[in-house]
Image 1: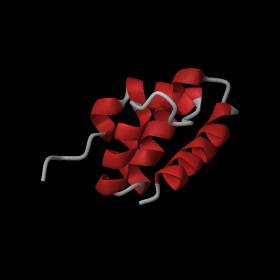
Image 2: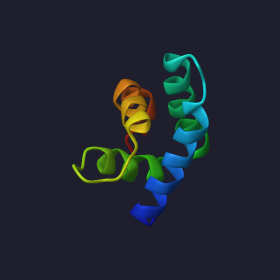
Image 3: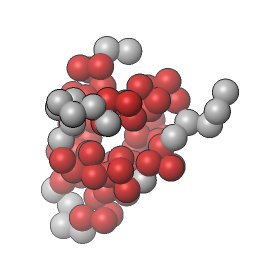
Image 4: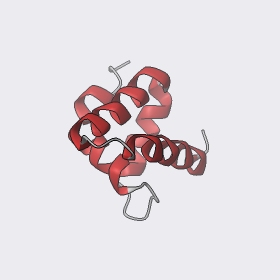
Length: 77
């Protein structure tokens, strides 16, 4: 999948959840959305992107991924 598209989609999810007043709940919401609706291939590629310095991933999405990385990691094939 196109890396720019993954970043754009993740950042849009982040914008939606950023409006929530409860930050921990927002971070969990972002992670849950990625886990539920992104296939393992997308999540695997996105986790690599988050670790890249100039990925363009928003701060809230990066924080959500770092905090909930274990839940987002696809099972080994």
